[in-house]
Length: 113
Image 1 (cartoon, rainbow, N blue to C red):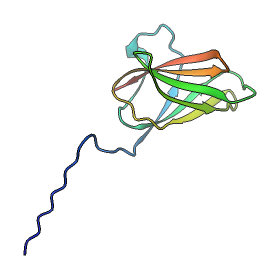
Image 2: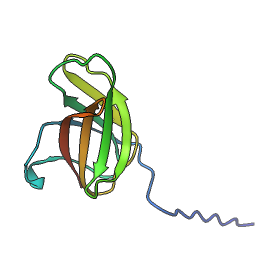
Image 3: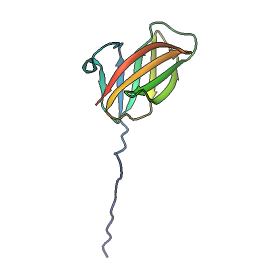
Image 4: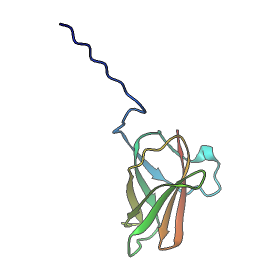
């Protein structure tokens, strides 16, 4: 007796890869000068906020249309934050924003390829 097994996959392959990215301020920079990461991986984001803030900072990642695709919180340690972005990103331009309360502290450009 012969058994035939057929497996079908619908959608994108699931990636467990993680890309580490250190963001630098890019206000007014051209997209080619932005930090680049591969698409469809988890991101470990490191960014400077210059000084330690007392409480948690609100983090937001928006696409080039301005829609929020991820949000989280972090606490600054020695002027830096680290956050794991659990949303896999499609190719495009994104903005990683750091807020203290309602005040925007930093905004970083990110190109996903």
